[in-house]
Length: 183
Ligand code: SF4
Ligand code: SF4
Image (tube, rainbow, N blue to C red):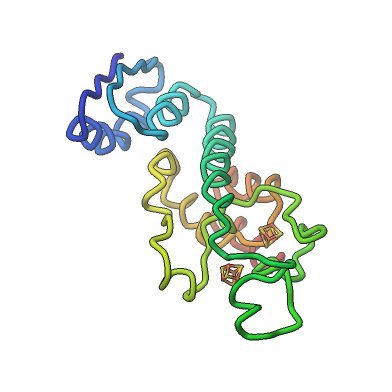
């Protein structure tokens, strides 16, 4: 099936239909796109729709969104200097490494895993200063279920593998129990 995107209007129409395209009706449909607009999400969504195995699709979208967010994180919005973020410097605390503080996945001031929930988190200070990316702005996440998006909002301090495991679970209760235990 060919999706044609010539302008923003077509793009919005396509986004509205993602809900339908990811349903069982399109399970055996292969998607192609003819795209004239500059948008980093379109190929990710199309590729994601063409991955029909649930776990493989989750992993693909997860990794691709991480790559997109990593490029934005390179902008150093939190203004780290000597391992202290702007909030830690302004408050003159002894703490360092920003929000990662004492997380087990933090090594020498850097995260040694890929946690999508953490990548989307910013404190009120930063939110006041900048227009930050919100979960609803990350269109490929629409390929996930409501339950999975709920997990995204809460799964801090987890490794990539733990996070993916939580997303694979069909039971929200089990996933939430894992998140609670870790926190
Ligand atoms: S979000 Fe706020 S508290 Fe967290 S690292 Fe950035 S500036 Fe520091
Ligand atoms: S998992 Fe989250 S809190 Fe832990 S080091 Fe990575 S980004 Fe920081």
